[in-house]
Length: 149
Image 1: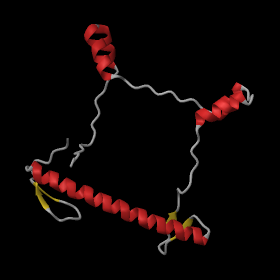
Image 2: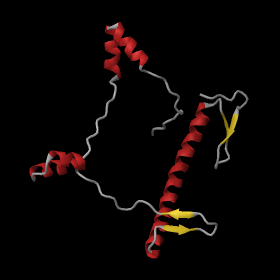
Image 3: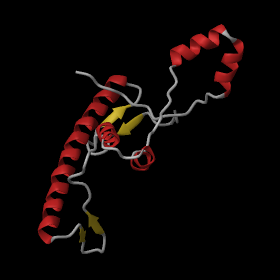
Image 4: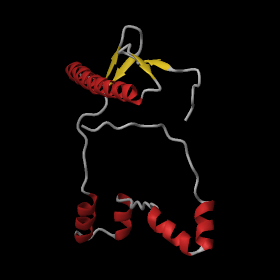
């Protein structure tokens, strides 16, 4: 975490509240206020985007040019969701060759590490532990605070 030793207080954007950074309760309350603001901003963005999309439909175009030359591009709306497994099965039943099915449907495989099992294996065998150590790295991620009610 990047620390600012000379920073003891923080002015919260949009609320203007001055928060004592050494007070976790005050920091938590400020985070809660910002989360509420995020929800309101997201709602406002949705309403405005819907209005732009509606106007674009009336105009019969997906791009609206602003007076300063910037362009509003309308994306989204309806999209199709496919039941890939059902399509694959029925194409096969209909007699489509497997080679053609593979051209239409791409199989994806994903691997995840079951950390608890990996730790057990490492504890039981030093070579397994060295393998895990060689292929593990630590990355810095932003801090995130959850607030539950």
